[in-house]
Length: 463
Image (tube, rainbow, N blue to C red; front, side, top):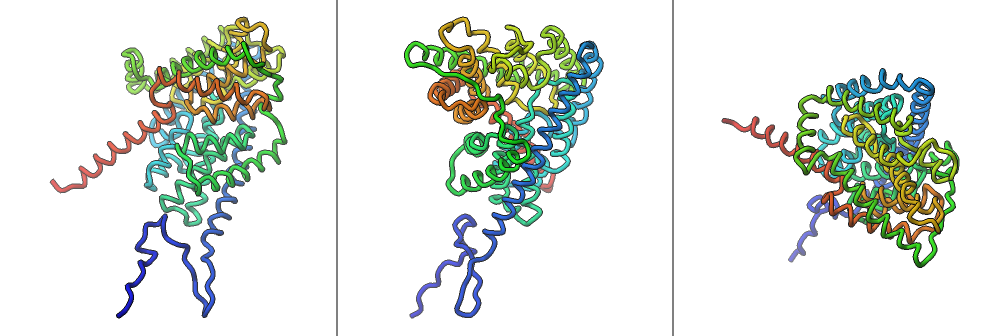
């Protein structure tokens, strides 16, 4: 009697197949594919890091150009910002629509859908190039946007393209390259490797998987190494001297967890254009007249810029850093509120641009507004809590917000207060905005894809 044949590897699901072996006489050796995948992953992470550093430098130069052009000539913004917003909306109204917004929802949606045409539509090189050029252009005309979300999008697109070029285009491999690229992009943008790892797991993947975590960590390491080598060992906001004594100081944790979370949730609802009838009407107006609506948003941004003496243009990095360091910033007590509105109208315009840096600036401004409530605490302590709470409220990713806030300020003494603020902010934000903002935008992309897919299948069916 013959024994039953064992199940062949090709009959098993891809994820459960044992590593194949090649036989040479009486010896067997592992197939080199795993090492080939690692080498491609490491190489693509290095390429993504190089491009990300270039992107970081060019966005900085672009905003410096805007500052130079408008210094002493604030009226110039009226001539360049609204027309540029309209132009960018027109450019991204067709095949380059995937270049709009922050880019993080597109990366999340790409991980969820295992279809190559869908990946190419959101992560193809034309979209990646448009994302880079239009984000640079947006900062060159003073848009209130950040570079971090676009860097996540760009790095994910680059790593996906390199992986696909070397044959790693099956759904599981593609998802890993995209996921690792997203984490590497954030690490390079902020020079925060740990935040890149946590962000990829918490936001993009939505869950922790052992095999994926090693890929993310490796990619973030190589991308972060490139950033460190080219930009130096710098801290985004510099070392911020902040501490929170036990006891009554922790009242500030509760205040900023609630205030930051609620304001962050309100901001998320505003940019989602969902909920109340007025927001839905604005959303329909934008869909019907995208170019004219973007022009109006540009005009609104210039009005906010003139009212704030130019403080709301750009990412808000300079103002936030100056406030945290206790140096003159040019940002008065209206900065937080004006910056929040500037972020809203810039995102409504539909132009490429991220939320992270502008959210950090708003949170710092909120902290500045509320320092009078806690005269016994350092102002920098209050502003760090405001920054962390508002960022967690906008993104509803408390671990990512906590790690970013700690790494950006080089302050490990505030670990527990920052984490507590972020957890409380996430809970209070959910009272206003039920679904995290990036997930909500990704779901819209997936819903649109499902509708298009169903229509395509209906057209192919015989009548």
